[in-house]
Image (cartoon, rainbow, N blue to C red):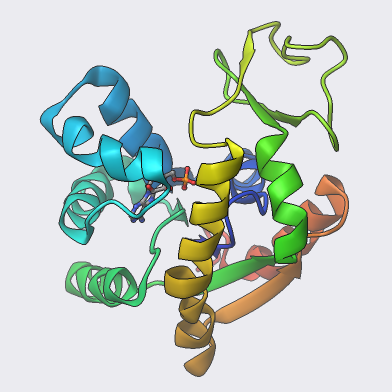
Length: 220
Ligand code: AMP
Protein backbone atom coordinates (compact mmCIF):
# COMPACT_ATOMS: atom_id res chain seq x y z
CA UNK A 1 0.00 0.00 0.00
CA UNK A 2 1.52 3.29 -1.10
CA UNK A 3 -0.77 6.24 -0.54
CA UNK A 4 -0.92 9.95 0.18
CA UNK A 5 -3.36 11.41 2.69
CA UNK A 6 -4.38 14.77 1.38
CA UNK A 7 -6.21 17.31 3.49
CA UNK A 8 -5.96 20.71 5.11
CA UNK A 9 -4.24 21.14 8.47
CA UNK A 10 -6.71 19.91 11.06
CA UNK A 11 -8.72 17.75 8.65
CA UNK A 12 -7.92 14.64 10.69
CA UNK A 13 -5.16 13.11 8.56
CA UNK A 14 -2.99 12.20 11.52
CA UNK A 15 -5.87 10.60 13.42
CA UNK A 16 -6.89 8.45 10.46
CA UNK A 17 -3.30 7.59 9.55
CA UNK A 18 -2.68 6.25 13.06
CA UNK A 19 -5.69 3.93 12.70
CA UNK A 20 -4.66 2.75 9.26
CA UNK A 21 -1.16 1.97 10.51
CA UNK A 22 -2.63 -0.31 13.14
CA UNK A 23 -5.17 -1.90 10.83
CA UNK A 24 -2.91 -2.61 7.85
CA UNK A 25 0.48 -2.80 9.62
CA UNK A 26 2.04 -0.22 7.33
CA UNK A 27 4.06 2.85 8.32
CA UNK A 28 2.93 6.46 8.57
CA UNK A 29 5.38 9.01 7.26
CA UNK A 30 4.49 12.49 8.50
CA UNK A 31 6.83 15.27 7.39
CA UNK A 32 5.39 17.47 10.16
CA UNK A 33 6.34 14.86 12.80
CA UNK A 34 9.79 14.36 11.26
CA UNK A 35 10.37 18.13 11.21
CA UNK A 36 9.15 18.60 14.80
CA UNK A 37 11.49 15.81 15.92
CA UNK A 38 14.41 17.52 14.11
CA UNK A 39 13.52 20.85 15.76
CA UNK A 40 13.29 19.21 19.21
CA UNK A 41 16.65 17.46 18.68
CA UNK A 42 18.23 20.75 17.56
CA UNK A 43 19.75 19.22 14.40
CA UNK A 44 21.02 21.45 11.59
CA UNK A 45 17.94 20.55 9.55
CA UNK A 46 15.69 21.39 12.50
CA UNK A 47 17.31 24.79 12.97
CA UNK A 48 16.81 25.57 9.26
CA UNK A 49 13.16 24.45 9.34
CA UNK A 50 12.05 26.12 12.56
CA UNK A 51 11.48 29.70 11.37
CA UNK A 52 9.20 28.63 8.50
CA UNK A 53 7.25 26.31 10.79
CA UNK A 54 6.74 28.99 13.44
CA UNK A 55 5.33 31.29 10.78
CA UNK A 56 3.04 28.68 9.29
CA UNK A 57 4.95 28.72 5.99
CA UNK A 58 6.24 25.69 4.12
CA UNK A 59 9.75 24.46 4.83
CA UNK A 60 11.89 24.42 1.66
CA UNK A 61 11.32 21.58 -0.80
CA UNK A 62 15.04 20.61 -0.61
CA UNK A 63 14.83 19.89 3.10
CA UNK A 64 11.54 18.03 2.93
CA UNK A 65 12.43 15.98 -0.14
CA UNK A 66 15.77 14.96 1.39
CA UNK A 67 13.95 13.80 4.50
CA UNK A 68 11.36 11.82 2.50
CA UNK A 69 14.00 10.19 0.30
CA UNK A 70 15.86 9.00 3.37
CA UNK A 71 12.71 7.77 5.10
CA UNK A 72 11.35 5.85 2.09
CA UNK A 73 14.70 4.08 1.68
CA UNK A 74 14.21 2.36 5.04
CA UNK A 75 13.12 -1.29 4.89
CA UNK A 76 10.07 -0.84 7.14
CA UNK A 77 8.35 1.02 4.27
CA UNK A 78 8.42 -2.05 2.01
CA UNK A 79 5.10 -3.42 3.23
CA UNK A 80 3.50 -0.06 2.62
CA UNK A 81 3.42 3.57 3.66
CA UNK A 82 0.96 6.36 4.26
CA UNK A 83 2.27 9.82 3.53
CA UNK A 84 0.72 12.39 5.85
CA UNK A 85 1.38 16.08 5.25
CA UNK A 86 3.47 15.38 2.17
CA UNK A 87 3.38 16.40 -0.66
CA UNK A 88 2.33 19.98 0.10
CA UNK A 89 2.77 21.54 -3.35
CA UNK A 90 2.98 20.49 -7.01
CA UNK A 91 6.80 20.45 -7.07
CA UNK A 92 6.85 17.97 -4.16
CA UNK A 93 4.18 15.79 -5.81
CA UNK A 94 6.17 15.64 -9.05
CA UNK A 95 9.38 14.84 -7.16
CA UNK A 96 7.55 12.09 -5.26
CA UNK A 97 6.25 10.52 -8.47
CA UNK A 98 9.77 10.52 -9.89
CA UNK A 99 11.30 9.13 -6.72
CA UNK A 100 8.79 6.28 -6.53
CA UNK A 101 9.09 5.52 -10.25
CA UNK A 102 12.86 5.13 -9.75
CA UNK A 103 12.20 2.72 -6.89
CA UNK A 104 9.70 0.78 -9.03
CA UNK A 105 7.01 1.37 -6.38
CA UNK A 106 4.59 3.95 -7.82
CA UNK A 107 2.02 5.74 -5.70
CA UNK A 108 -1.32 3.95 -5.86
CA UNK A 109 -3.70 6.55 -4.60
CA UNK A 110 -4.22 9.87 -2.92
CA UNK A 111 -7.17 10.22 -0.55
CA UNK A 112 -8.62 13.63 0.15
CA UNK A 113 -10.04 14.09 3.61
CA UNK A 114 -12.52 16.80 2.81
CA UNK A 115 -13.42 19.34 5.52
CA UNK A 116 -14.80 22.86 4.83
CA UNK A 117 -12.24 25.55 5.59
CA UNK A 118 -14.54 27.30 8.06
CA UNK A 119 -14.47 24.27 10.41
CA UNK A 120 -10.71 24.01 10.49
CA UNK A 121 -9.95 27.07 12.63
CA UNK A 122 -11.82 25.61 15.61
CA UNK A 123 -10.38 22.16 15.07
CA UNK A 124 -6.83 23.50 15.03
CA UNK A 125 -6.97 26.03 17.83
CA UNK A 126 -8.72 23.44 20.06
CA UNK A 127 -6.30 20.63 19.26
CA UNK A 128 -4.29 19.02 22.05
CA UNK A 129 -1.83 16.17 21.62
CA UNK A 130 -0.57 13.69 24.20
CA UNK A 131 3.12 14.29 24.89
CA UNK A 132 3.56 10.57 25.66
CA UNK A 133 1.57 8.56 23.07
CA UNK A 134 0.63 11.17 20.45
CA UNK A 135 -3.15 10.68 20.80
CA UNK A 136 -5.08 13.71 19.58
CA UNK A 137 -7.98 15.40 21.41
CA UNK A 138 -9.92 18.60 20.85
CA UNK A 139 -11.11 21.03 23.49
CA UNK A 140 -14.38 21.65 21.59
CA UNK A 141 -15.17 18.55 19.59
CA UNK A 142 -13.41 15.64 21.33
CA UNK A 143 -12.40 16.67 24.87
CA UNK A 144 -10.48 14.30 27.15
CA UNK A 145 -12.33 12.95 30.22
CA UNK A 146 -10.00 14.93 32.51
CA UNK A 147 -8.75 18.28 31.30
CA UNK A 148 -5.11 18.18 30.22
CA UNK A 149 -4.77 14.42 30.70
CA UNK A 150 -4.67 11.75 27.97
CA UNK A 151 -7.56 9.23 28.18
CA UNK A 152 -5.40 6.52 26.69
CA UNK A 153 -2.16 6.64 28.68
CA UNK A 154 -2.53 9.38 31.32
CA UNK A 155 0.17 11.50 29.63
CA UNK A 156 0.12 15.29 29.64
CA UNK A 157 -1.80 16.98 26.79
CA UNK A 158 -0.01 19.85 25.10
CA UNK A 159 -0.92 22.37 22.41
CA UNK A 160 1.36 22.60 19.39
CA UNK A 161 3.24 25.89 19.11
CA UNK A 162 1.85 26.49 15.61
CA UNK A 163 -1.79 25.89 16.62
CA UNK A 164 -2.30 29.51 17.69
CA UNK A 165 -4.80 31.66 15.78
CA UNK A 166 -2.35 33.75 13.70
CA UNK A 167 -0.24 30.82 12.59
CA UNK A 168 -3.32 28.70 11.88
CA UNK A 169 -4.69 31.43 9.60
CA UNK A 170 -1.42 31.48 7.66
CA UNK A 171 -1.28 27.68 7.44
CA UNK A 172 -4.79 27.58 6.02
CA UNK A 173 -3.89 30.23 3.41
CA UNK A 174 -0.79 28.27 2.46
CA UNK A 175 -2.95 25.17 2.10
CA UNK A 176 -5.39 26.94 -0.21
CA UNK A 177 -2.66 28.44 -2.36
CA UNK A 178 -0.13 25.62 -2.57
CA UNK A 179 -1.63 22.31 -1.47
CA UNK A 180 -5.22 22.46 -2.75
CA UNK A 181 -4.02 22.26 -6.40
CA UNK A 182 -2.88 18.70 -5.63
CA UNK A 183 -6.52 17.61 -5.68
CA UNK A 184 -6.61 18.35 -9.41
CA UNK A 185 -3.09 16.90 -9.88
CA UNK A 186 -4.17 13.48 -8.60
CA UNK A 187 -7.71 13.63 -9.96
CA UNK A 188 -6.44 14.21 -13.49
CA UNK A 189 -5.04 10.70 -13.85
CA UNK A 190 -7.63 8.92 -11.72
CA UNK A 191 -5.55 8.59 -8.55
CA UNK A 192 -7.84 10.60 -6.28
CA UNK A 193 -10.43 9.28 -3.83
CA UNK A 194 -12.50 11.56 -1.59
CA UNK A 195 -13.71 11.00 1.94
CA UNK A 196 -16.13 13.31 3.74
CA UNK A 197 -14.16 14.40 6.80
CA UNK A 198 -17.06 16.08 8.58
CA UNK A 199 -18.41 12.93 10.19
CA UNK A 200 -17.62 10.76 13.15
CA UNK A 201 -14.07 9.35 13.35
CA UNK A 202 -15.40 5.77 13.14
CA UNK A 203 -17.47 6.44 10.01
CA UNK A 204 -14.52 8.10 8.32
CA UNK A 205 -12.29 5.17 9.25
CA UNK A 206 -14.84 2.75 7.71
CA UNK A 207 -14.78 4.73 4.42
CA UNK A 208 -11.00 4.58 4.38
CA UNK A 209 -11.02 0.83 4.84
CA UNK A 210 -13.52 0.38 2.03
CA UNK A 211 -11.26 2.33 -0.32
CA UNK A 212 -8.05 0.71 0.86
CA UNK A 213 -8.98 -2.95 1.35
CA UNK A 214 -8.44 -3.71 -2.36
CA UNK A 215 -4.84 -2.47 -2.15
CA UNK A 216 -4.08 -3.77 1.34
CA UNK A 217 -0.66 -5.44 1.72
CA UNK A 218 -0.91 -9.03 0.59
CA UNK A 219 -3.53 -8.10 -2.01
CA UNK A 220 -1.57 -5.61 -4.10
P1 AMP B 1 1.90 19.49 9.87
O1 AMP B 1 2.17 18.77 11.16
O2 AMP B 1 1.79 18.53 8.70
O3 AMP B 1 0.76 20.46 9.94
O4 AMP B 1 3.22 20.37 9.56
C1 AMP B 1 3.64 21.40 10.44
C2 AMP B 1 4.55 22.35 9.70
O5 AMP B 1 5.70 21.66 9.20
C3 AMP B 1 3.93 23.01 8.46
O6 AMP B 1 3.17 24.17 8.79
C4 AMP B 1 5.17 23.35 7.64
O7 AMP B 1 5.85 24.48 8.16
C5 AMP B 1 6.06 22.14 7.89
N1 AMP B 1 5.83 21.05 6.92
C6 AMP B 1 5.29 19.82 7.15
N2 AMP B 1 5.25 19.08 6.03
C7 AMP B 1 5.77 19.86 5.05
C8 AMP B 1 5.99 19.68 3.65
N3 AMP B 1 5.66 18.55 3.02
N4 AMP B 1 6.57 20.70 2.97
C9 AMP B 1 6.93 21.86 3.57
N5 AMP B 1 6.72 22.10 4.88
C10 AMP B 1 6.16 21.11 5.62
